[in-house]
Length: 281
Ligand SMILES: NC(=O)c1ccc[n+]([C@@H]2O[C@H](COP(=O)([O-])OP(=O)(O)OC[C@H]3O[C@@H](n4cnc5c(N)ncnc54)[C@H](OP(=O)(O)O)[C@@H]3O)[C@@H](O)[C@H]2O)c1
Image (cartoon, rainbow, N blue to C red; front, side, top):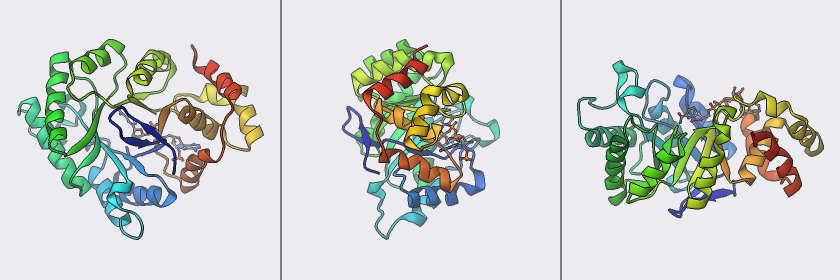
């Protein structure tokens, strides 16, 4: 896959990323399949409730060699605060200070992923206070300083002022935002504009599942007919052309190939404008 979104940190994030949530015991097989299909971006989390991070590591390990090396892969994982975990399966000591929680979670991620560094560590959600979010961020910055993490981001951040405050206080600026792409937040138009202006790569999830109406709209279905592609491909292609990196967690080899085949065609500016109307609120 040749297309990338580049962050202000200078890192290339593949223009579509394979997501590994909810795959349980099938995680390793699906990650191997995704890498074979051509995905070079993998998203996971150190959150056993929803992700099998060790399965991601096993899938990557099984795929390395024969023309694929670790540096060919953009590997992104997350730090999840205590409230996001199943209390019986927290991958760090929940009584430790936040800095210690981040350090322990990150060490677990490196072990699970069988790697010495991750390309991006994402804070799964802002913490209840700005001070707590910043404490987590400071811990991440100290790991960036020693080369364990290449860049960092924040997820489920739907309030622009929260992102602005983090950006203002951060010594190492956030390079990724990963959010739901849905009508309830006005498709994050304000956050996306801020990301564009600050070299932050905006990644989205729920792209297909939260948008049955736009996907059935003639603005998309007519493009699907004329390009002989599926509505899902048109939406994913549109997003990559307006600077959004969609995540896809498909379990289907055919859908993996379709999701990567979006780079075989390009929407014209008027076509993109027609799709933009669907997300203009
Ligand atoms: N940061 C967060 O809090 C958060 C939350 C949720 C998700 N995520 C990340 O985002 C990833 C994606 O999650 P998601 O919620 O967007 O859902 P998803 O797991 O990508 O599921 C999307 C649905 O769309 C289908 N699909 C995928 N590609 C398709 C295609 N080309 N044509 C038709 N159907 C297609 C899939 O079915 P098939 O399997 O049959 O293809 C699946 O039912 C996750 O794995 C995770 O990495 C992050």
